Amino acid sequence: MHAGTVRCWDCEYGYDSVGRASTIVYRSYDSGRALATINIAIEYVNSTQGFASGNVESIELSLPSFSSALKSLKVDFRYDERGLEVQRVYSILGERGSSTPNETKLVFDVINTINNEHLIESQTIIRSYMSGTEVEDWGHYDSTGMKYSYDNLGGGVLSVSSSIQYDDVGSPSTRKSVSQFTFGSSRINELSTNIGNASTRQKYTYIADRVNATTPPKGQVGETALYEYDDNGNVKKDPSFNFLRYNVENALSIYAQTDVTPVRETKYYYSPSGELNRIIDPDGESVYYFYNDNILAGEVTPKLRTHYIQVGNILLGRVLVCPASSTSVNASCELEIFGTDSAGSVRAVYRFTAGATEPVVNYFDYSDYGERTPS
Image (cartoon, rainbow, N blue to C red; front, side, top):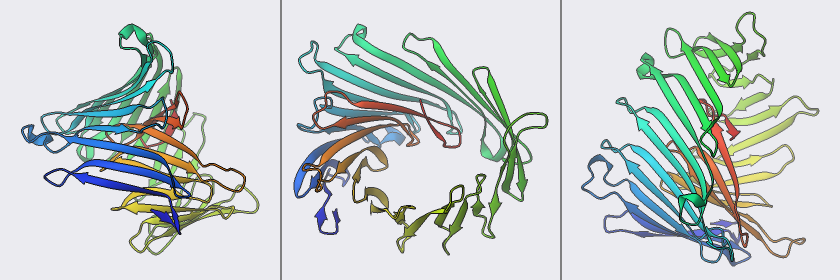
């Protein structure tokens, strides 16, 4: 991929005898110099495994001479007899310099239990760090267990979700429960959230099928959020009184932040096929987006170039390159490995810097409605 005349990154594909991608090589560049080469090998479930046949069974990633903290990454997948994913395990191998033992291992493990309606009944996420090969060498371990219940409205609407997070000695550290009450259809009537001893409740009101307001139940303290819509059903004013405008294709074209003076506008531009290809922020800085087979492949700004590493719809991470400039002689390059669940939500980010001996690690949780928070 080129930004103007500048070569940013490229990728090469190798295929097996039935035309499936079996190897991928990603390369990142700055000023014609290769900064990182990422090799990926893919294996698939064989044809004797029923409905799981043809699914990705494992992915191996390696970066020669990039960082001692990342020798290799392997992702293993496991499926049930229906071909549904029930487990994915990320294993990141690194080194600890001259320490003995000198091998480290980061493990991120997602386990699903799926009911007869193909809905996730429970999910366990295990995060661990190990140096050496014995269990006694594990330096950190924690897990989060989530359970989901559904009612029969609309073919299985989420009614209760609960989670318990355990620390590295197996003791519960955080408990959270969210109950969703519906009426007449799959529309939410009330949402109740309990975190530890703290409880909040939110009531929903509608105009036609659109949420008009969320308010605390009568007699309870809380904030009221109001929504306004245009004639096409798009939100035109959010609860913070920011304005949203849309183009003829009903895609967001302007977001206006009104709590500052003057109003700050972010503008969105699309390709003829409907893909977002440019955002201009309130300060006039542009972000350009590039795609490969309708999947986001990269982003470019004057100060940062990002390209995504993926196998089909499995997002493995991204490479971040800060190009060399008049004030910085050499470009900087970082690699982020993503630990995702079966829905594709990024639950863990392991950031490796060229030459560094340890990654920077961040974990994330999500609400039932996609809101992300640090874990």
